[in-house]
Image 1 (cartoon, one colour):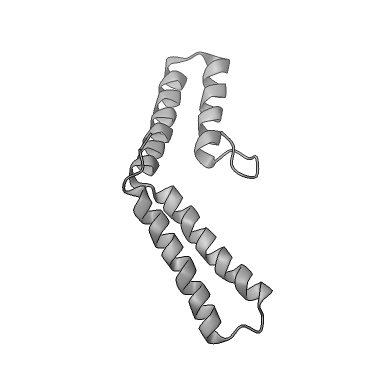
Image 2 (tube, helix red, strand yellow; image 1 turned 90 degrees about the vertical axis):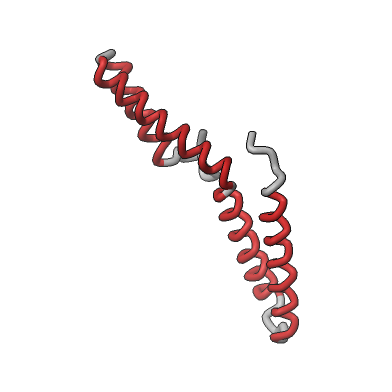
Length: 106
């Protein structure tokens, strides 16, 4: 339910606000709003699982950080060494993305 830093996502926060409002009022309008907000969050999660976009973004971040870490640890690396490291990390990224094609959705 919480992000890596322990905080709720915007969608989770909106759902919790709608739930709190409905719990305090028990009104039909607030129940409908909670249903809409929950439906949007479920739809968003389904889209992420079907497309794998959240994982692609994570893999892209990992690729960039790996290259940055290599450069940080090897400040005197030649352009050829950096290019080799970039190529290696891009191939890992591509393989991870390709694996998503056969990964189960749920």
